[in-house]
Image (cartoon, rainbow over all chains, first blue to last red; front, side, top):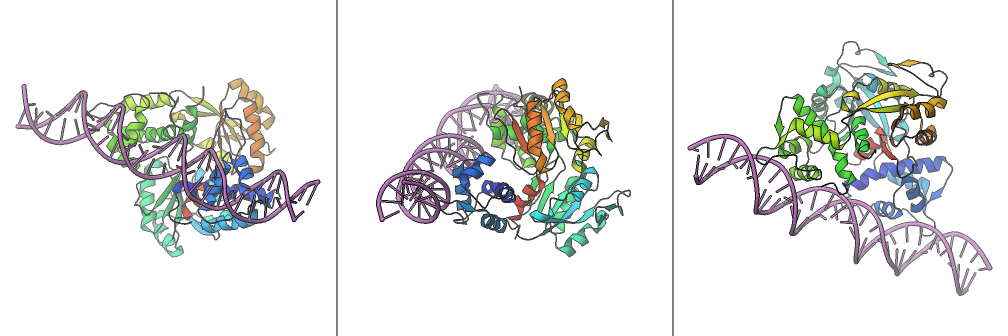
Length: 205
Length: 205
DNA sequence: ATTTGGTTGAGACATCTTTCACAAAGATTG
DNA sequence: CAATCTTTGTGAAAGATGTCTCAACCAAAT
């Protein structure tokens, strides 16, 4: 176990975690790689092999104890705690993210919101007061924040990213439709709905 | 060229397209696989190989004519036209999507918005009037809509998906945090910010 | 005209990822 | 208890993806 785990395996674990949580809420207590695979459209062998990177979580003949497996996966992914997240951008998207109730029970909490426009600064969004960008460094450093979400226009995204990284952020979820240039110890994930739509039109007749 | 193109190759084309558009807007007229690769953090060989699936777009010694390559990629991805998209869910997220200005110049246009809550139905969002769910089938069929975005709570997502597919939709962008069960001729892309955050925490120290 | 430097496209090769197949072990049935 | 069924974890095989390398080609400079 635990040599270097392929990226692609880590990428599937949150999906497993989400499906397992759903199974649990539906009242199941145990499941199998086959059942999970059927639900996710993934082969059972792949699920078993993925999990086997981290140790034997299952029991032959029975399958996996759901609550136990959830616990283990949360531990592997380090979401058995609450991460504070900085949000930059208080437009439509930023506001929607600030109001989203789905972060807290999955390991994250928005801790502060930044925006540069004078109309937005000082505004109350959800339980937060929008702070100006020049307070970003201090706030992020004080709270020791390592994760940020960028929801600003594409033109501003790189500059915001640089600021965040300078302040200690090491994981960025970028909603701006552009690639970010970051040092190798910083991880970036991208959300661009248009890219995902364009991945499907190719297959439409 | 054009035998069966791997999924993963198609997945990168929208990224290339986005980067090329940016290069064009910055005033460049030609580019090379090296320059593009440097910007995207992808090897130049990979870019050349990806593009070569569709024919020789480049010129040795010079590189790629940007406007020409953009044209070709838009043609391959079938976004050299405007696709009408149905949006289901008029909450915070649905509203943010309805207001987003970034769809139109990249091949998509939201054509209608649906929601089931009585507080939302009839409401004006951007230039649309929110329609009740029971009008979904008719509207989607009339407009011959093939693409939809789901922005409803997880509990309702599968039922909405079934309705959409029944009405003729063949590509779904699902914002609900759950896996959808769909027939093999329907494509689904998922956007769950928490999943993407959880993909990064593993690597945080 | 020739040389130099840069670039593509593609076959060969290397690496990564998934699937197969089965021993080992727990559960269940008669 | 014995036979049967189910399921995991894993090494081996197969398949998919990415990188290397280089011939062919183009542009620019001398």
